[in-house]
Length: 235
Image (tube, rainbow, N blue to C red; front, side, top):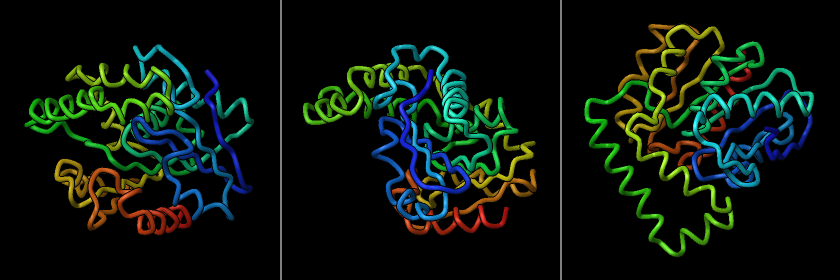
């Protein structure tokens, strides 16, 4: 499917893939303003988010990667700098597996690259938090206006303890694409393995950002943008 996409500016294309339950409009706002004068900025709503309506989340990451390919082809966009956060990073990793020739650089944040030993405990906490949204009238109204009814399907998808694509993370061991992984020091699971990647794969670079956790790009937006810019300019 061709994703609902906002495109602005001129220059080398930079694609931002938003985090879960956000949209191309509501996420990476600081970064899009920061890079507006130098790059063509592309912000799609991922499948089932915003105006990219879909009730089919069965094979989510593979389908979402194909959605992005079809969208880029539709707009005649070839090579891109690809930037993702959380859910957007997982889609970016799948896209990099399938279509590496389309990526100039790959920037990931908000990912857990190795399954934690206490994954089931963490999963139960996440499920409880997500289910609480369904009983929060204000949250339900907000997400209904943003996504329609489809956002509820993500809540139910997350109940499956095997939903997280840990196997896809092996890409970072052998990826030939220049890759930057940005993690917040406050998220132990995300930082624990991060420092190992430059030793395993010289194409992977790591930045650990202070005073940030899972959503580094929104918790430290300026620092995130400066690091991202330096990385892209080095490539």
